Length: 543
Image 1 (tube, helix red, strand yellow):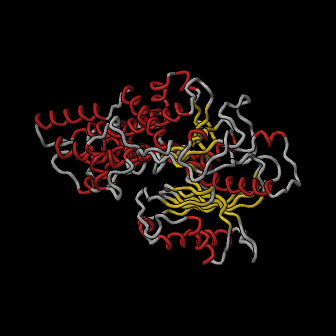
Image 2 (cartoon, helix red, strand yellow; image 1 turned 180 degrees about the vertical axis):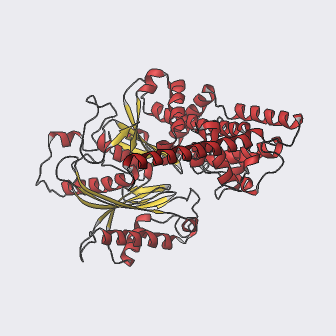
Image 3 (cartoon, helix red, strand yellow; image 1 turned 30 degrees about the vertical axis):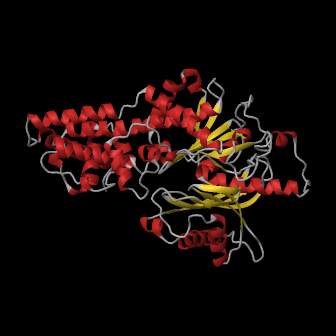
C-alpha cells in the first residue's frame, strides 16, 4: 500500500504540473493575440483613432448636460401632474392610499411579471410586528414567444403557474376559499384604484394582442377561474411602486423606488395638492405614489448618438422609451455591440474579417458588457473569451489593443447610462424639495443595479456633480431583495388591513406605533428623525 507522504507528494506534483500547463496555455494564447499582425495600414489606424475620439466625446455627458436633463424632467413632471398639459412623462398616480407598515398578517400570494422573468410568490406574515413566518418563490423565464402571445394566453400561462406553485407547496386554497393575490405588473397602467386599472401600452418588447385598454386584474382573475382557483386580486401595481412599498416596509424614510434591470423606471411619494391628473380627487393633506414612467423621457438636452437612434428605429416601439433605450439592461449591450461593429468595419479593429456574429443584433448582452467593463484579468483574457463566445471572433483576430478598446467602449456606454440615471434621480429629489441634505432612502431592485458596480458608481458620482456633496451623500440607496414581488404582496396585505379597520374590526386596537405609520394619508413629507428601524423578516441591503 502507498504511504500517505508518497500519495501527497504525487498530488502536489500533479497540481503543479496542472498549474504549469494552464499558465503555459495562457501564455501561448496571449502570445498569439499580442503577436497577431493585423492587415491594414496607417490610414486605418488613424481612422480607428478618430472614431474612438468621437465616441469618447459623444458618450461623455457633462455636468452641465446632466443639470439640463434634470431641469427639463422637472418641468415635464409638473406639466403632466397639472392635468392641463402633456409631456413625455406619464406621471401615473398609483392610487395606493395605504402603505404596509409591518402590522399586516395572514397568507398572501403574489405574481410578478417583469420584462425577463415571471415569479410566483407565497408569503405568510406573522402576527408580530414586521415579522414573516414563511416565504417561498418560483421563477420562470419569459422567452421571446411569451412576448407575442395573445393576451388571454399570456394570462393563462401566469394563472397555471400560480396554481401549480400553490399545489407544490401545499397551499392550494380549499373549495370556497378566496386567496388574496398581489399583482406586480410592470407595464404602464392607468390606475382606477389600488387593485384596478387599464393597460396603456406594452413596452420591454411585449406586443401581446387583446390586452391594451383592458384591466389586468380582471384578466388575471378570469384566468385563475379557468384554472379552478377563484381569487381576490387586492393590489395591481408596477414593479417600481412595489419596490418603493417593500423598502418603505423596512425604512420609513423611503421616498423613491427605482427599477434598474431589463427596463428602467422611477416612482416617488408626491403631495396630493400637486396631483391633478388622478382618476378621483385626492383627500386634502394626503400623499400619492406617482409612477413616473421615466423610461419614456424625451428631451433635447439628452444627447443621442447614431446607435441610440438606430436601436430606437428598429425597435417594436419606435420613437418611444428614449431614456430607457439609453440606460436600461435590455439595450446597453446592444449599444456597445453596434459601436464595436462600427470600429471593426471602419477602423479594422479586428483586421479585415468581421464575423457574422458581431453583426448579429443583441449578440452582446448587458451582463457580458458588464463583465468586460469589470475585467481585471491578465491581458484582459475574460474580455477575449467573451468576444470569441458572443461575437464569433477568432483568437488571432483579438489583440491586447483590441480588447482594451472594447473594454473602454463598454465602460463609456455604462458610465453614460449611470450618469443619465443620476439626472433623473436628481429631478425627483428637486420635486421632493429634498436637496438640503435631508436623509432620503431610495429602494432599488433590478439586476443592473445589483451586479453592475461601475453603473452604481456613475449614479453616485453624477449626483455629487448635480446636487453637491452634502445633498448627494444624504441620498441612501438600498437594494431591496425581491422588492417587486414582496411589495405586491405587502400592498395586498395593507389593503386587507385597511378594509378590516374600515369595516369596524378592532379586535386588535392600533398601537401608537401603528397609528404613526399607517401609510400615506397621515405621513408628511418630512424625514424620520429616528432613522432606520430594525425589523425582522425580509431585509434590505444598503449599498
